[in-house]
Amino acid sequence: MEPRTSRRVLVAKPRGYCAGVDRAVVAVEKALEQYGAPIYVRKQIVHNTHVVKTLEAKGAIFVEETEEVPEGEIVVFSAHGVSPAVHGEARQRGLRTIDATCPLVTKVHNEAKRFAAQDYDILLIGHEGHEEVEGTSGEAPDHIQLVDGLDAVGKVQVKDPSKLVWLSQTTLSVDETTETVTRLKERFPTLIDPPSDDICYATQNRQVAVKEIAAQAELVIVVGSDNSSNSKRLVEVAKDHGADAAYLVDNASFIRDEWLEGVTTVGLTSGASVPEELVDEVLAHLARHGFGDVEQVESVQESMRFALPHELRKDLRAS
Image 1 (tube, one colour):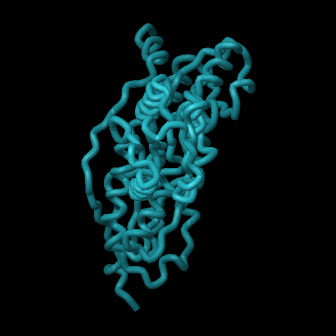
Image 2 (cartoon, rainbow, N blue to C red):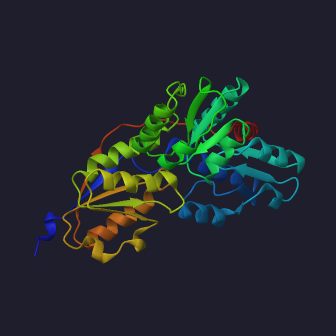
Image 3 (cartoon, helix red, strand yellow):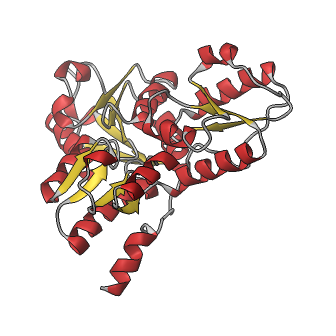
């Protein structure tokens, strides 16, 4: 039997909360403090079950659509962004809005509006049904067509190949997106790149970090919820870069003992909407199974911060 001391955990850094998620969660918390409960939130503020339950316990009410919010109440729009139609519905209902859309998602919305105004066809690389994709598509529905993976490349139809640009969902796999763009450019050599990379810094950094630990680990555990795109991409990236197995877990209770059999090195990371306490719980669980040697593996340094939504800042200053 292996000596227990030989079992180690490599913890990826950076991991967990990105600046956009932190801003969105704090926005709901500050709104509850400033205005009192209830505060309504359209969709999950971020894609994490624990975060949503924690905010519900503080008085946040999560709804699917603005029509579920009583007239005149406050509604927070999630970090994933919403379409102009949703903003219009909120105005019609007399709702007070706090827009917690991640500024990096807003950047993609602005790119979509600008290229549509110049009559470009826009190929939006992303996952069908994801809230971010729905919000971006709503900015210019007549100009945007979704490209969901390599299989969709052959189905793309455009008016004028000389006026064609691609944009992307911010939480995709960098490698997979690069491959999709390469395939699109084989079909449309004049396809234009966005002015700056649409995949967000945090998504890219977490993928770089998981590649480094996956190369040294038999098993990688990614903490994140099943509806979190960036968390699911981390599992894929880990499998593609050396890990024998990789699993997505909402929390420590999802870890199965058989995953750890015969494993000497576990890699551990978390998606961009995951609070650090969930990672700590996984580390405690692994320690109880003999994985007491914990090493942080830092690939990239992060220092990005975003200001709170302006609607909230104004009232916080006045109070």
